[in-house]
Length: 146
Image (cartoon, rainbow, N blue to C red; front, side, top):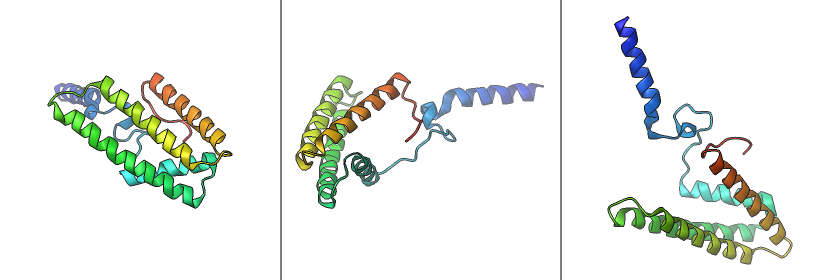
């Protein structure tokens, strides 16, 4: 009986700890997504954008370069913001920088698109924003139809 109690306590402690991950990221979770490297993330972004606006091969090349350059700059900046002060990064500063990056990237992508593609792109971005807000309101859980 004592052994069962010890086993139950150990199981409960392990379940509560969860490895410091969100439930959607815990090993064995149905919502767990494999970690992607930057190149895979760029390819996924291009694929989704292409589905929304039907990019030409030349546009895909330009958009890929935009995503690549901006991704590198973001990683460098956020890495320096996290590590530079030796303490937790200022979330508001990071959010402001992220908004700045998004706005710049949005302008760069719009410059690549045709007049016919722009309304489709605007719709795509609005839907994307709505999905992001919904995920945030649902506690960051992912799932649904991707």
